[in-house]
Each structure stands twice: as C-alpha cells, then as structure tokens.
Image 1 (cartoon, one colour):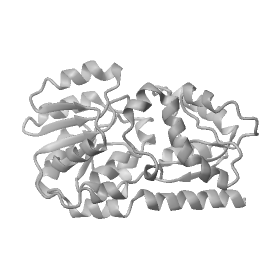
Image 2: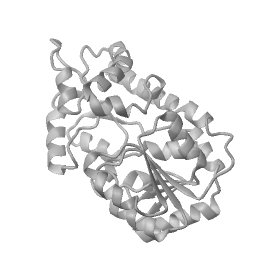
Image 3: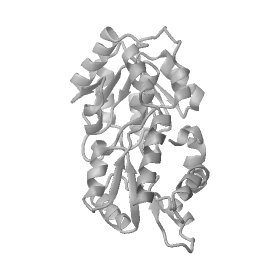
Length: 300
C-alpha cells in the first residue's frame, strides 16, 4: 500500500534514525487514517518510534504499522500483543497466524497479504536472458536460517548465490563464513535499481527463512517481488509460503537444493506464470482492500 508514496529501499535512514524513517512513512499514511475518523493513530514498533507519538492529547485509536522489535522472543511477543490489543481498535495484518493471534483477544482484524509494486513489475517485463544465479534480496537478520543457507550453498557448487541487502551486525560473522565459498557473493545494501538488476540476472529467488513460530507469521514480500521479476521461488517450510501458489517449499537443505535445481531446469526465467501471479497481486489492489476495511470500521 505504502510503496506508492514511500520507497521500499530506505535502509540508511531506517538503520541510523528509525524514528525519522517512521515519521517519513507516517506523513504518507496519516491522511488516510484521519479520513476515517482516526483522531490519533500511533505507530507501534520499537521504543524509539513509540515514544515519538506518545505526546498527543487525544484519546487514541491506534493503527499498527510496524513490526515489534522483540528479537524472536515468543513470550515477549504475546505479552506485547496482549498490552497492545487493549488500546487498539483494528488491526490489518499480512499473515493468517497473525490474524489468529489478534482474534484471540477479540479484536477486529483484516488479512491483507503483501504484494508487488506495479512499476517493479514493469521494470522486469522485457528481460529474457538469465544466469544460474540464486538471488536473495532482503535484510539478513533473525528471520534467515544461515545454517540452511550454508548447507544449500555447499550442495550446489555450480550455482552462484548472490545475497543483496543489509546484514545486521550480529549476523556479520556467519555470513562472512558463508561468503568464503567460491559460489557466494555478498552484495551489501542495495537501492531499488540495484535490487532490480540483481533479479534481472538471476534465475531463481530464494527465501531461506527459519521455520517455527516467527517464520509462520511472515508473508514474505520478496516472494511477490521475485515473481514480478519472472523468477520461480524456492522457500523454507513456513506457513505462508506453503499456501502461496507457484512457490516450491524445501523442508531441509537437500529438498531446498533440489527445488532450486528443479526451478533452473523446468522453469526458465522470465517464467510467465510467476509474472501473471504478480500482476494479480499489486499494491494498488491491496490498497483497495485496506480502504474497504477502513470504511467498514468507520461504519461500525
């Protein structure tokens, strides 16, 4: 929804000044919320961001826009959610498991899955030549199963793995070890154009996320972006990826590697079914779902 107003690749600002990054995005979103009667709408996320919006004198209706910074702690997550739902009127979430969490507390919740940007899709529509490259585009953080990635890299020495995106500090050592393999390139943070170039030369997009309660609450936006680029997608066995059409799920390193091989052999990019799926799942369409949800909330 927000990519029409706010570029996705703003890692430098977000990393150094998270509150400022949130405020920039907020400026694009707030008018929509006020239109539907939200006299105060607070970004719930990191401590820095939450404190930025704690000064309003109005009684809050809170609209959750950011992921909580809870470091994968399940007990802390449900404690945070319990406190948050006491102050929240409505949630919009991207994954079924998140919706179940919110519904448990008796709150209104609408599932709006992630999507791809229309211009992102158009930017890849005419690229026909690919290489034997498996691309990962995104932050390397607690979501990524680095043990799985290392094992797959070793199983497929004839496939080049290019990892594009910010590497969080605590994961710099293990990713450096993976980068010692001859078939691995760590590209570091990429802007939107460099991200598109990575996907243009790749043959398959990978999502080696850690399985478990955190993984099952992620609807990976990169799966839509990969398909917008005409790439087949191989992902870990997380709930949302099991439900996504055209995504091949690997339950361990061997099956993940086998799925990459199948993609390279049977689904040459640009793969038309992937691009057709992305065309049906654009942020413009998701914005309409959110608009309908807010309208229904306003009428209640």
